[in-house]
Structure formats: C-alpha cells, structure tokens
Image 1 (cartoon, rainbow, N blue to C red):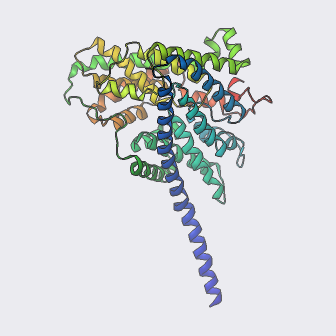
Image 2 (cartoon, helix red, strand yellow):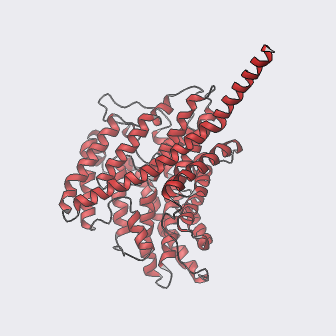
Image 3 (cartoon, one colour):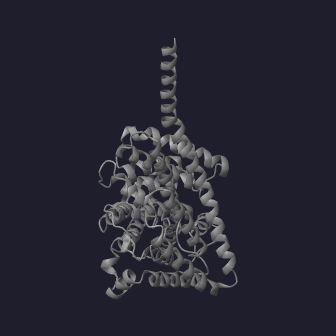
Length: 451
C-alpha cells in the first residue's frame, strides 16, 4: 500500500511538472509579453508626448534635447546594453538561425535576458523622449522573445530546438500585442523568423499569440491600429496603374533604405565613416542635430514614430507636406545609423503614407485612403522583403479586406524590386552583426556594430 502511494505521488509529481512546463510556464510568459506590449506602448506614447510638450512653442529646444538624448542613448547602449541596439528583430533571427553548439549560452546571454530587456525598454523610451524617428514594435518583438527565452531555464533539457521555439513564440506574441494583429504574428513568425512551417513550433507559438493578444485586448480594448479603412469595394481595372507605380516607388525607396543601413561602409565618404567608427558619441551628437533640424524645418512632422501623421493622413484629417516621405526617410536613417534601440515598422508605414501622396498626385481620381494602404504595405515589404507579413499587417490594422488583392500585388512586387538591389534588411543585419560573437571593446564604447 505504501509502495503504491509513493508511485502515485511520483506520478502526480511528474504530471504536475509536465503540466507546468507544457501549459503553465508558456501561458504565464505569454501573458507577461502581452502586459509588456501594452505598458511599453503607453510609456512610449507618454515619453513622446512629453517631448512634444517641451518643444511646443519653443522649437529651438529640440537642438538641445534631441542631441543630448541621442548621445546618452548611444553611450548607454555601447557601455552597458550591447545587444539591445537597433530593431531587435535581427537579434531574434540570429538567435533562431545562427550556428552554435548545443549548450553554448554565449549568444543567448548577449542578445537576450533581463539586461537586454531593461536596456531595450529604457533606451527606447529615452529615444522617444528625444524625438528620434523610431518605432516601438521591433523592440516589443525583441522583448517578447527575451521574456519567452528566459523560460528555458526551467526546462530540464535546454536544447537548441527548445530555445529557438521559445524565441519564435515570444517574438510572434510581441508583434501581435504591439499591433493587435494576431494573424500577422503567425505569418511573421513563419515568413520572417522561422522561414519554414515546422509543426512543432506552431503549438507554442499560437498559444503565446493567443494569450498575449487576450492580455492586450483586456487592457487596451479591441482596436484597429490605424482605424477603419474606408474605400469602395469596386475600384476597377484602372486601379492597376496606381498599383504598379506604388510598387515601383516603394520598392526603390525601401531598397535605398536597406542599402543605406547594410552598406554604410560603402556609400559613406571615408572621413564620415572613420568619424562614425572612431568617434561614436560625436557621430551620435551629429545625428541628433540632423534629426532636430529636420523636425524643426518640417514643423515637427518627422519626430517620433510617425503614427499620428500616418493615421491623420489616412483619415483625411491633417494633410502632410509633400516632402514628408523623404524627410521622414532621412530622419529614420539618421536615427538608426547612430546605433540606438528602436523599431522600423511604424516609421516605415509613415514613410509609405508619405510616398502615397506622390502616387495620389499622379492619380488624383483614386481614393487617397486606398493609395496610402497600398504604399504602407509596399514600402514595409521593400524594407523587410517579407511581403506576406507586410500586407497582412496593413490589412489587419486597417480592416482592409476589400483591398487584399491590391495589397498583395504591391507588397510582392515591391519586395521583388527591392531584392534586385539589396539583401533583406533584418536577415542582412543579423548575419553581419550577430552570427559571430564579438565582445565590446575595453572602453565600452566601440560596440560590435562598428567592427
């Protein structure tokens, strides 16, 4: 009897442990990712609103605030939070695909963990406080992957397969929570991160997306990121011309941005290149001054993620300068070349909205909202070269099911055009910067991105 009781206790203990590892742990982590998505969104908005309140009526303050914030952000990233720089999606791709030995924790410790989570949140908020042209969605993906990746410590066998499955699940949940786009989270995980349809990934990934999405839904409500897209359901065959022009324009602009970030050693003059490598803080100061000057010259249109400007243009409540697409492009490039944490999604969608003004000027008979949706999907697809993710994100965040075929066409064509000139941005950055571990220099200021 006593032996049977012990067997039952061991069986119960084994089943409880298995239930915790298979259900309790991933669900809890997914809920935490959802919470962080909502909190980070609110904190980012508050930080940017505080910056706008500072410079309102005193635009000259931007020349003090933005460069100072940029220098502090670059210093902190290189000194304490290496691995937190940039969007965060290249780090997740490296964590999933970079070759490493079983049990080697070097890459995971460098690119994920509590230190990177703190740095990603803190320095991104500092960048928003300085009016930099960044988004929060890429960092949310990185944070989600880091949170889910930390749960590997509770599993008795930490295999590479387990680590990769957790990173993909957390990243997908982060994107879903950031945009309130669960379908895009699934597509993003398959197309951009995993690049396959491995069935064993799907259970953990979809569970994480569901629970992160439910958490976001409970706290932020069921909302459309850019609001309802209002276009006629019968656009007509003539709409093919705007689709072609949008695809070409977005493809070339997106390719130019990816090339600028991936090949800065090639196109930068030697003096500027040396200045960026040897004097990173002075380069950060210069970048901050450029961002401040563009913001002042455009009356604040280029500061921040561009969400407010794109949403206002989409709904016809506030027209933007015809130069908005180009000035936003330059401000975003200046922000990222300095090496601070920050995402690409929202600024890319805003640039797409700016490009849409040029397309609409050529085809004024087309609905403006429809052209904006096209160019948002097209430019994002050109930068990431992930066309399915791009058009699904735009379709979900605008409820643009009536536009699904044109969105697919523009995204696919723009991605192909971009691919003629440059590699996919996220995968290119992952390979160039994170596939091989390079510790920071002793000074703490020459981070891995400059080697």
